[in-house]
Image 1 (cartoon, chains in turn blue, green, yellow, red):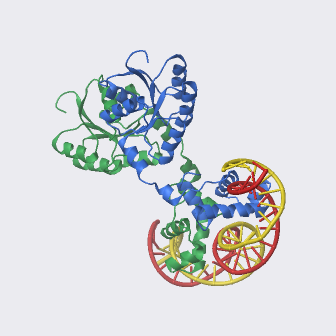
Image 2: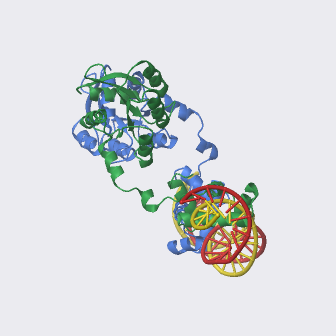
Image 3: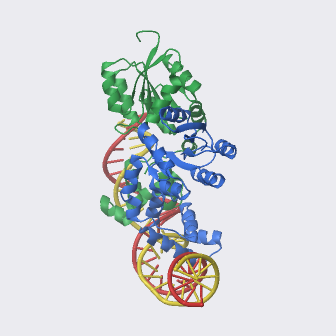
Length: 211
Length: 211
DNA sequence: AAAAAAATACCTGGAACCAGGTAGAAATAA
DNA sequence: TTATTTCTACCTGGTTCCAGGTATTTTTTT
């Protein structure tokens, strides 16, 4: 940063949110809003020409999803700190963003003071969450308790085809496999999900957003 | 309204959105923000003491859901115009809100001019939508094209049990029916959904939010 | 009161599912 | 390079699914 105030960018496709954030950041010391953008590509092209210390990044954007965008930002400008800003409070989302190099995750119901505090924490090199996210991350998740099974490539493939209504012989034909092989994978799926038939298989798979 | 400027209230649990909306409405003639609230109950108690011409109402609130809140508002103050403000663009949501007496439905990606225009239209007694909502409502929905089957009580019941992983004999036992009867209902379900097995049955039922 | 829809129950027979194994080859990780 | 995982394939045997009917009783609608 050129002076002692950090340059901050905002990316969100909702004008209302853009305005709201700028308003909340008006009376924040050491933070100056360098720009606000409604699309991921717009911000990326800005980032190619300017230095951005920290960016508040909405995850659901029209042109590019937040996870990929985060990756692009880090590729382009590794020193830029990314703070995810989202309505969605799923653990998996939080974890994915962190994996892509985000320094924190804020929900949009955040307060002004909290927002500013989180930005300062992030600028200090810390990982930071808004209060609601902290709570979600601290208590063990339903999916963790249940244990979301990690599926192999073939299993995902076959799960997909089952969900499309294909029978075991059908799947064998489309994948050029023996029906017996498909049966084996099918059984693995039932075991991993700890269910006893396809009805429950499809249902839990949908619930765990695997379909 | 006491003078020529309409009194407007905002209900949204996100501070950012509250700030953003107020900012966008600053340079709007004839509109004065009478108050902003983060919970439905807070607004309702305000409404008991003050006159509100129009309210921008977020559908997803922590304490009360938007549809019920809309009903309450109309019960308490029928002349107050309700404009729904939401992230969700499902047709069913829009229709439900209109049914509860809302005068319009806006998505949060709305622009400042559009917002003000919509408010003025609503104050003139019209039903108003933001551009994105207009588009969604104008094109025939997927569910309309596919035709969501209307299920009988028994069928819904049995669909539910199938989704819980029960087999035909199981269901027969829990409902004190002959397995053959259950089979008949099961077949009706497959026919009505135009699918050939449970995998697709569950999947489409979930997609159509029947489960 | 008549007609339509829903719920009940039955029959047959083939296809697919599901549980319980075993086992070798290929790819990946330690 | 060894160990582990994944993918492949097979066998048996009982259970359930699914398609194609028919048919009576009860409920709802007209």
